[in-house]
Image (cartoon, rainbow, N blue to C red):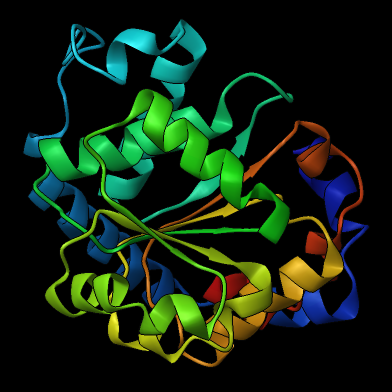
Length: 239
């Protein structure tokens, strides 16, 4: 209790006003909705770490990645997201791809997953896809030429893809994304102010509609000051 009281001393006026407006009915409604979502999806969750153990990408995962995929599964099942805070080199992309493949194969939720990343990270996602998760189908969108590409346009129209990789620089300009009801969004390398602005802007403009958003980053992303703390309560709620 003393720790909570000390923490409250750091709240600014805006946060205090938001907390004062919260009421029991609103909280109860959110809880009921989350439990309903969990009841519908819990039977579809893999029951043990041995699930699909002999198949890629599962056979390539280390123990910390297996634990992370299960954590993402449980959050996703109740409509939540979170921060996947791995240090550099511990396999955030492979873990995220394994989660997408589980959602496709384990829950039969095909398509409707989005990865947002900087332009310079596009090739890393494509490389990991071809190395670890060869059965996943991806679309890469970096500009209008990619959207107009006949193969991409057909895949988007027919939802014949598993996930889309889009750059922060292009996401707010891509009208094609507005037509896709994404089930989960994964934000890679999100700490730069322009990237954070692109995330918030995409949700504010209703370009992205999802119930689970996962942020990938190192531990310091949530331990030290970051641009995330500059987001307004409304933007945080949207994301």
